[in-house]
Length: 303
Image (cartoon, rainbow, N blue to C red; front, side, top):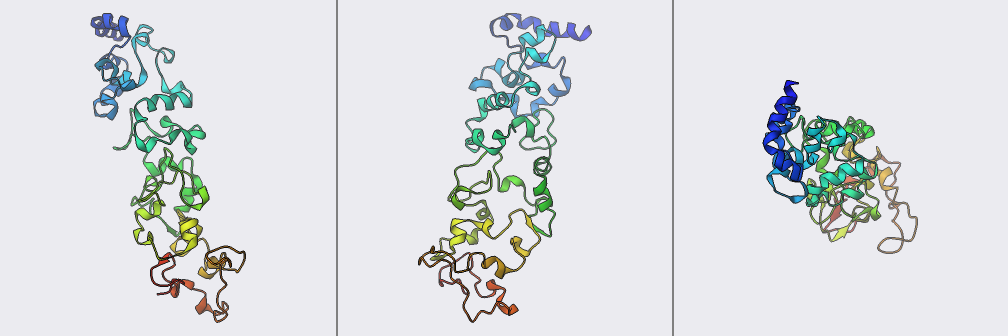
């Protein structure tokens, strides 16, 4: 009873405004939600505004939850205010995009793999009680992604992997969880939501810039199919994240003489007759063909 009396006293000076606009201000929310209100001033949404409207009554709590007049009059209840816990995924997305649609990194969110699977903002972000200092994530980033991507978690535990679990990298170094632009490699069949680097190229080139080129002599599979043609990007049992344990078996997937494709319409050439693959010294192709990602001096990528 005392709590509702305090709430009534707080709202009393705003009665005229509430009648006109149904907004009551964030201070009124403190009466019932002190745990949220106490630290909300540190939240980036504290000064946010719904629908791009910078009026004071539309900032803070009501900027996301909508007018609180009816909620106060009814003494609470999720049906009297915009409660994200009971909203449909599309409604959550539309509400957040009221402000965040202007962010270029979220331009493709409506057609992203997450949105198509009904994974929306509130599934990954905790607006009021985030344990991390950036992006209001519900958990630390890797643990958050692992909730759904269990196979990837297993790959990051393999002997050779990118060091996400060590904290030296994170998922968003390569992926954009809000959706990415149209692909430019691998015939449009790249892994979902991979970010672009530099000139709209693979995310790998953010770190491995020496592999970018342009090269006078390009390795066709690198340029067309991309890094993942030979490498497993998350983790592998093989050195250098290769998809096969022996280098020559990886090369023979293409260099088998089949087909009439390539620069000279002869398919991928076979290894020379002098390269007896039964001899271990010829099985490590990159011992000689060291510029395998591209070369400016030799068509066969030799030293």
